[in-house]
Amino acid sequence: MSAIDVVGKYGAAAAAGDLEALAATLHPDAVWHQPGANQTSGDHVGPEAIVAHLGRFFALSNGTFALVTESATESGNLVSTTVRFSAQRDGVPDLDQHGVDVFRVEGDKIAEIWLIGEDQAVEDAFWGLA
Image 1 (cartoon, rainbow, N blue to C red):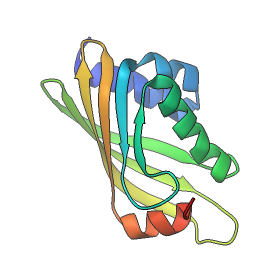
Image 2 (image 1 turned 90 degrees about the horizontal axis):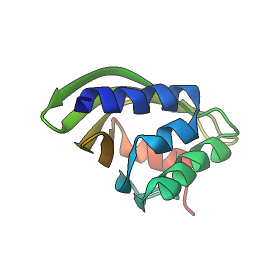
Image 3 (image 1 turned 120 degrees about the horizontal axis):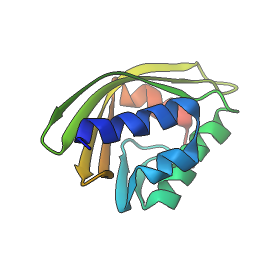
């Protein structure tokens, strides 16, 4: 399976909200690098921690968090996707941004993920401090 196919399975699971299928695409030592200075920021290691992290997006947004992959390109074991993500929370303006996610694939599993949003300050303000 090509790296872009592995990331495609991840994207389909994320879009469907199927966290079990998403976890199955992750390497046992996968690292999710969440940028910023907010309560979701930091590194999350392993499928359980990554799924819990994604679940936190849904919990903090009362189930409104959505992620759509718009395009994907690959170079060897690296895949870059353009995404659109959105969410709503009480008391703050809605979040609706584009971003780039970069994946490193080992074999048929995602080993590392880096996220880049179009406006980190807006994202930090949306998610808030811990």
